Amino acid sequence: MQSFRIRLNVVFLLIIVSLLVTLGLYTAKLVQSIYIDVLEKHLTTEVHLIADDIVYGQLYKKPDVLGIRMKQFAEQLGARITVLAQNGKVLSDSDHSPATLPNHLNRPEIREALRTGTGHAIRYSATMNYDMMYVAVPLKQNGKLEGLVRIAIKITKVQETVRNLWLSLTGVLVLVLLLYSFISTRITRSITQPIEEITRVARDITRKQFRSRIATRAKGEIGQLAQAINSMALSLEQQMSAIQENEKRLEGILNNMVSGVMLISDTRRIVMMNVAVEEILGHDVRKYIGHLHQEVGKNSGLSMFIDRCFETGGKMREEIHLYYPEERILDVHLGAYASEDGHVKGVIVLLHDITSIRRLEKMRSEFVANVSHELRTPITSIKGFSETLLDGALEDPEISRTFLTIINEESDRLNRLVTDILDLSKIEQKKMPLKFETVDLVQLVHETVRLVREEARARDITIYLPLSISCILDGDRDRLQQVVLNLVSNAILYTPEGGEVTITVEDAGVNQVELKVSDTGIGIPAEHLTRIFERFYRVDKARSRESGGTGLGLAIVKHLVESHHGMITVESREEEGTVFTVQLPKRQIEHS
Image 1: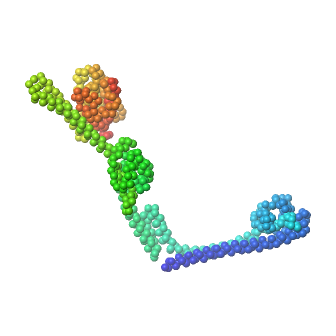
Image 2: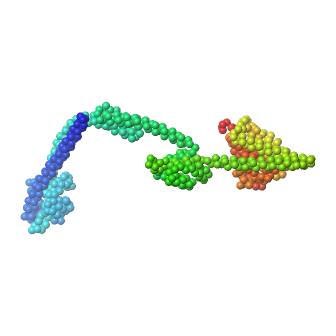
Image 3: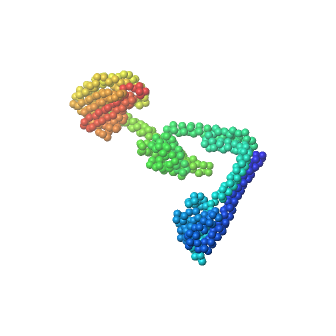
């Protein structure tokens, strides 16, 4: 209570000081006003006497007499007297020659005198170069306006008196204020310092500076308030630290999720998106935060499901197809979350990219169908010819030999098919480790061509070998030989008799080797070029089967090249030929 009384005394002190200042201001203004009123009345009386004298003697018609008379009045009164004609022209002036003075009709005191009978004004005189008080009255003869007379006096005395009064009041007030300011400062410091500390800490808290504390020894209510705020700041610091830690965890989890997460508020605007959504939908996360969800999901149909989830307030699961920025299949989970009163506050959208799963399912289905189809042909042949032999054909040696030859060929074909399937499976599952060593690709090509040279001669096909002497790279010799053998065998197979197969090996750059296998064969139609590396895909199915091909050779080649961190491309024109280009790195260490 003592502190309250001190503060109350200070308030009363401020009120008293305010009243003293107000009273001083009012007194100074009152004295100035009274002084000016008395002076105006005095001048008004004098100017009427002068006006009566001028009218009585009709001095406005006698310029010489008028000038002498006005100077006499001016000397007696210590003022400036000016007589004007009714049009404002100066007839006489006690201080200046009338000819040097301008027309005075527009002076404020003259206009007021013409309007009301007496004109008053306090203004700066451009002629005298200081402030003056003016009083003007009209000169009337038998009710007719004959001119005007104006008396003016310097108001420097008035201003000086008022200035002295102001200085006295100001001095007293300053002394009083200084005295009481010293006293009140000592008193208010003990009150305001803890409040200022409390204010500072409160501002720091609003700026999220929760480590700020109040350093004060104040007692009583203010001390208790300071301790309460310090406790609140400590609690907020702990809570915000926990919240920030949770936010970082949540942000880390969301940004490292493969699935996309979106949060839609009850205003139908996006309030959160993770990086996966940006990758799946092709939209910049920062650009669409705060925007309506229709701007992101309208084209894909996602917005329709979000609106439906808002309406039902439940959970949904849908599958949608995207065609931009690339074709994708998404498994979409939507769930609404509500407040305690059951009002839907928002919708959480979870996006799973199942494109690869669906593609894998399709590939597995096609693979099973293709394997079944490919296996059915040799098995059917073996079974059919075996049954024929068992039914009696075994007695005929010639027929038996023919059927057994076919069974043997179909068994070899079945064995090649199973072997290729197993090899392809091992390569795709990375279960066929590559043994990298230094390989001369030119020498490897020469060694591989020897294996198919007899087949080429039988078909009268000319094979042109690389012109370069050597080309060294890192690779698995057996797998690279398998790549070359498949490409050269295909070139021979699809080249008519008398055709040509050309193999070139070139240094394509700092760490690149380029192998090309070109032929003058039947070529590949343009619509098939994008699919020739698929398993069991054949352009000419009848000819492939007749040659004993399994349809897996190019798929194996593609996987082996990619296992060497290389790339294979194809160019072809029907009836002109085909060119397979394989690009391989010289050093595999850079890809390890």
